[in-house]
Length: 286
Image (cartoon, rainbow, N blue to C red; front, side, top):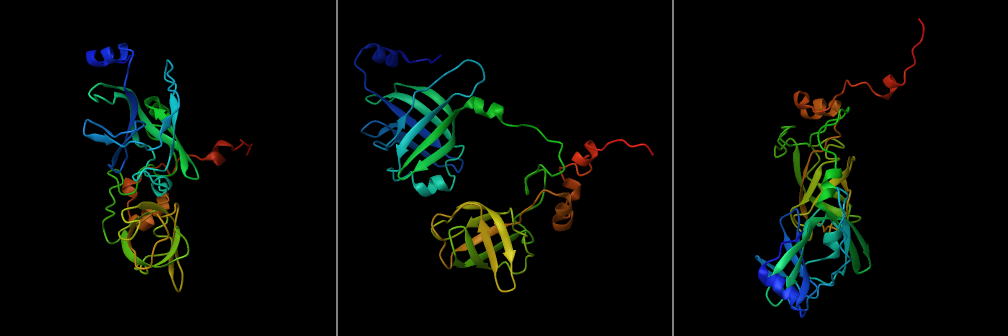
């Protein structure tokens, strides 16, 4: 049940309303954006909601129980702050979103209609469709620990304890050449073994993609060059001379934890747990 201020309730009851929709988006990197379907910008609670941003929302559907209530927002990539590169780089993944019904003539009269997060984003040309998931979505996500062979800690977190800022687990360098926005040849990583940075985190520190963080798909050390391939494309092909920092990767196996990090004491998996082969064994007479 929504609670309206007396002034807003009176406005709705007047029969002649000045209403608009406002969307407030808070990305995980701290960037906050506002959009509205009104023809002028609307400002309230410290956020300015940009006008004519090409947004249109589907009907909001509510249901009883813990089912996930979804709706979709359709729009065009017409906003200066909403770019195709940002969507492709995943900057809006799981962003917090709030949807308000606002009296644009007096923005103090408003009501929060829905809060949730951005789910799947589909793009087609210059348009996009974003799925907005209700808060019940988080109840469907797995919580707690799993009994599994591999480690369930994130490399470098408080449970792992590895210091990724140490020069032993962190490299810096320069891009020598780029065959695509995902694959390039680099300098500065010659002292690290082949595959050391696979599954690690690659951070651009200069160039068009400065600040962008992407997971490393493969780190290949050849006799004549070192190549890095990322899981996602950078914001345009990296340029020769762009600098980067990259941290070590981990495949979550106890063998890697021991050989690469000497950190078995903090290994968070169960390497001696019986596997499928043990479970499917058939008893035989001796």
